[in-house]
Each structure stands twice: as structure tokens, then as C-alpha cells.
Image 1 (tube, rainbow, N blue to C red):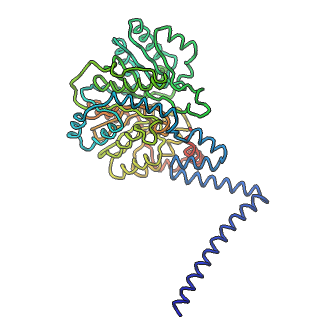
Image 2: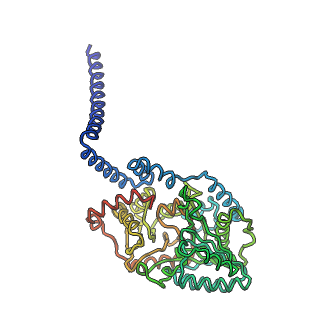
Image 3: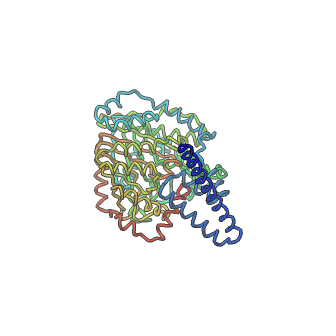
Length: 509
């Protein structure tokens, strides 16, 4: 009898709880409908509060998928349209399928054996996993390549012009931004002279980055000098699909197949501090001379095929003929939205952070992190790795700087050291780890570089250039101010609200 009563009592409790639960839901729905009908002002205020709470939740989660969820919820119709234009990856679109076909053609030219990576494995079994990952993505590793690191843009241009003047066969240049000024004037003068000497010149410029210079007269002038030029992804062709958002952010110069340059610099005067835009412009670059330059030749020709709809060019006709006996290893790589969701540019950065044992040093103009990379940096710091990041004090885009600042808190709480470069704008995109390896290239730590832009870089190991990059980082720290968690937490409430909102909207920025 007692067992029956106990069972009956349990059932009644369950029914009571169930009824209470559904009554509460019904009451909430009734209140919402009542306020919407009879007190629209109160309803509007509560809707605003709801949006603020959602923004706060997403700010805590820091997920780009969550950002799109909020945008669609807040703007149900417009947000849906924006997502279909901006948010979808379109990995199976005809454009991306064609792009992957060109990539496969390029990878055939880049195939190599296992001997070099086995040598690296014997020296650095901890870091060889980064190289293995890049090889699996199709990017070979080279030795017999001399790497020279440049800590400012003006030094890059001086060396690059000197190499271009010695060109005998071809010069390939691929850049995001080209602007009128001394840098472009000096380069164009050399290109014109080399074209007269019979050197093949190919220029590939991004349409969005060259809007200020890419006119009919400009293109006509380039052609009259005997120079071939193509424009990557003209913005008017993909405006209805927002595919103009996929920009070519790579910076590559290849000379005779023997020498290659990459880094953060574009072809404009601010990158060499000939003009001042945001204080002193701190950039960086790397010069490869020898076998490793061949990958950048193939990267350029891959993008040239895309811009020219598959024009036939044999990569093998542009192999280097200068060889060096040099210690160390270089591994150029590239990535873009056609490789999502497994983009090598993000993958290389992630593996560098996760494999660091003693320190990881990063310079970036944009610290616009997704949750996974933020967690990687936090976990590295919590495990005792010295994580230091240098970002600009003087920004080029105020809204991106606000997102930068919003990311400081979670990182500093975990022990990450964040420094702002006081003299001006730091545009260098470098990662250095454990005195063993580094990455120098065009890759920002932001959503655009990892998901929307075509980027490139070079992984270096066991080279003097790695030590030079570390020395430059430590020297730059002397010109920086370290951020303080207490001061950050006491920033004005208006800034906090603005930063939270901009972080949610960061996929659109």
C-alpha cells in the first residue's frame, strides 16, 4: 500500500511540475502578446533589452557563427539576405571548383619526395608536425634556400629594386594595393626598362585594392610599356553575389624564378614611410633566394590562371637555376576561401600556437579572433608559454581597433601579454616560436584573412632569419606600451557597449 501511494505521489509531483512549467511558458507568451498590443513602448524597451543581452552572450562566446545568428535574429529578413551574400562559404560554387582545379594543377608542379622533411624531423620532432600539415595541404619544404628578413618596408623596396634591375628572364608581381607615389614610380621605371630589354613582365593586382589607380588610362599606359597586367576579381562582376568580398591579399614578387619576396607591404608610399598616414608604418618582409622561390612562382601563376580563366602556362618553365648550399628550411604556403573550412593559412597559425613550448610572439594589425584561436592562445598562456602580441596604438580603421581592444580582456586574464606599438601603425604579420621556427607573410589574425581573402606566407625553421625576426620583435617591444587588465576593465561604458556591438558585426567589417 505504501509503495502504491509513493508511486502515486511521484506521478502527481511530475504532473504538477509539468503543469507549472507550461503555465509559465504560456504566461510569458501572453505577457509578450499583451505588451505588443496594449503597451508598444514597454514592448519596444524590452525588445531592446533582449538584443543587448544577446549581444552580451555572443560577446562572451566570441563565435562568428553566433554573430551571424544574432544578425539574422535582430534583422530577420535583411540579416538573412546579408548572410546569403556575405556569410555562406559557397565551397561548391562553379568559381571555387574551377579554382581548386587550378590548385590541383599547381600541386602537380610542387610534388617532392620525403627526404627533406625527414631531415627536419630528426632536428625538430616537435615542430615537424607544422611542416607535415603544410605538406599534406600540398606545399613542399625546401632547403638550399637563403632567407633574408627585413624589419621595415623601406629596406624591402631597396633590396627588391636592386634584384629587379638584375632580372634577365621574367618579373612577376602580385599585390593587393597599388597607389601613385614614389614606390610605384620607382618600380614602374625599372619594369619599363626591363621590358625594353626583353624581360617578361606580368602584373596581377586586386581590383578593390587598386580602385584609386586602375583607370583606362592606367591600363593603356601599362600595355604601351610592353607589360602584361591582369586585374583579379573585378568588383562589378560579382556584386550581386557579394563575391567581390573575396579579395587577393597576397603580396608576391618573383624574379627569374630564383628570388621571391613576400610580407605585409603593398606598393604604396606609406609602406616605406615616404608619407605619413598613421605615424611610423612598421612592416616586414622576407626574401627567398634559391629553391624555395619556386613555390611563389607557382602561387603567382595559379592566381594568374584564375584571373585569366585558365590561360595555359607551364610552371616547369619557370624553375630556379640558382642553387645555394644553405642550412635551414623554408616552406611557402597559400590559402583562400576556396579551401574553407580547412584553410592552410589559419591551420598554420593554429599549429604554431599549439606546438609552442617556451614562447610564441605575434605581430598583427588586427586582433579580431574567433573563439578557437582565442582559446588556443589562452591555453598556451595557461600552460606556461610566454605569449606576447604586438598590435597598433595608432589605427587605420577605428572600428577594427575597437574589436582589437574588446579581445584584450580574455587574453590578459589568462596571462597573455598585449602591447600597443606607440610610434604608429604596425602592419607586420609575423609569428615566432621557441627560437626554432617562424611565419612571415600577408596573414592577419582576423576573419577576413582566415575565411575571405587569398593569403600567402612562408614557414621558416633552423634559419638565421628566425633569430632576426625574434630580435626585431624584442627591439619593437621597447617602443610599445603593455596593456593593463585593470585599466582595460575600467574603460568607459560607452566603449564597452560599442566594442561588444562591433564584435558581433565583425564578419561584416
